[in-house]
Length: 179
Image 1 (spheres, rainbow, N blue to C red):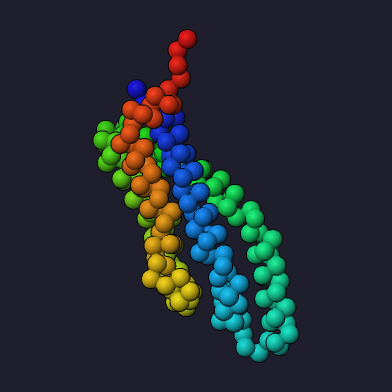
Image 2 (image 1 turned 45 degrees about the vertical axis):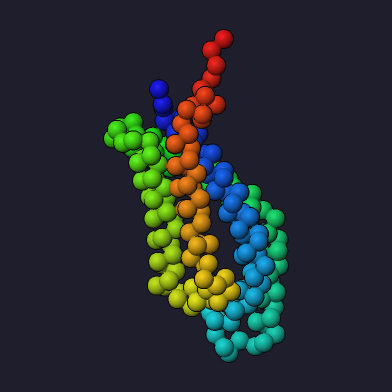
């Protein structure tokens, strides 16, 4: 019999996969353009009457912070996705155990909820509040910008669905053996 802890563990595994893939995407696609992106954003957001020397110093300070944070970003991404995965795993457990939805349906609803809350709402807010940032991302990342920005949700949903479909395999792995 499934329990909430089994669903939480399933969510943690999907979160781990999501964290690893998100970190790889960050390292391969976002990090190489980060310096240029910061420079352009600073030039867009900072008033034009600031002296060039101060502007260059500001950009240099921001780049220094980014360089210092770069090594820990993948680790924090993975930890964040593990925590989110456990929470959304419990949501899947609720949908399955309390609302009596099928495993596949509950995994799909959970994944779509993840995408809506953590990917689509922020994407819509960024698009509406700072359209120049989205234009900049599209300029540097190309057509794949929206795919890259929604990749955590897509990865989590697919991982959770695969784990839910292969329930028997995972239940053997997660169920403690009796001695």
